[in-house]
Image (cartoon, rainbow, N blue to C red; front, side, top):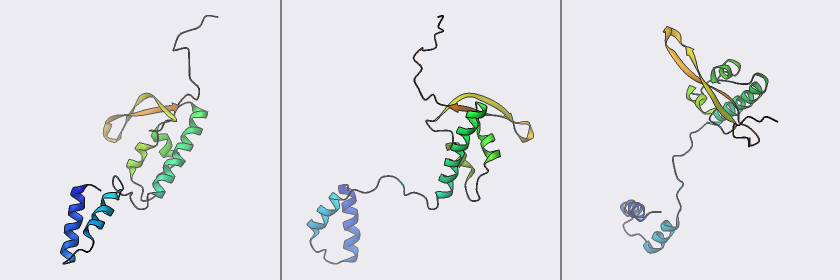
Length: 136
């Protein structure tokens, strides 16, 4: 724990206790304490994580059959479960298994045009021809 945080904790303890026994020992223990980094995970993220894994599995199968997939196709075949925020769809294809091939324009309600990404599976093996054509 950082020294300024140690001072904050000790200040709070001193408001509760008139005399802090073994203050040096408490300081050493707090100095050795490694606090978890970042924000705590949200409660009940299980349905979201489960849906993302199912969506990725569906996307892999769909790509093997059809060549490319986009998030609209995934959502048509695998709707979001109740209580899962729509923003969860943004993480489905942001995974090393998928590579963006192109942007596809999609007409939305009211005539607005939006582009969505179409993805395929990342190559399993390295392609060592660097795009050159071979004439064997």
